[in-house]
Image (tube, rainbow, N blue to C red; front, top):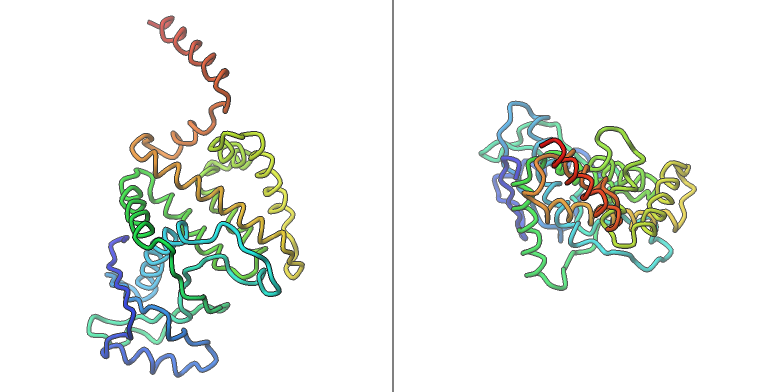
Length: 287
């Protein structure tokens, strides 16, 4: 993934990484990662400490985005603490350290999650199907000409739904949609292009317009309501279908602009047929 090698282990880190514990112990105020979390080693080649850390976390988050895309719940039953829990089922641990090939600490500089909240152990009901879906998605993603833009959108998506403040999550998740549907800055096209993916075009366009208004109102931090988290679940559904559209049509479009031009077409069969006749007449005319 992204010129990195990702290894995921169910047991502890190899002994050569003992320096990690010494570095963490120097900062007792940081919440430690629970023992039941899987250990991850991302191998990278970079010229700087910051570059290596950024590259490692980017590649891991792209992989995690695919997992969350197929592993997150479509909705959840609300409760007292429900609205303050991130939607993502698979989340990072609290601290990330950088090491040389021999395992020694490469820098006193490290990454940590300031709003870390432990996640419940993730178990998919159909692990084989989940594995196949994720593998297929990654294979298709790799062969899409504009996959860098898609990866940026996936990063925005997964990092948005790591947020426990649902107001922030909503704003950031809308940004993930904009990355794929409004790269040119025509933000009104977001709702039209996403709604095109559904047979009930007008119904979904109305829902998306409502979500856009909710996002634009930029609810003040602290005025959290259950509706905001439901809005995040709704937006997640539209992002999911948008990503699937691009994956399923891998090989059909040479650029994101071309894909969006397709999504700009009328969502009405009769209008499309009338336009087809006009295009055929135009082709005949210029010949």
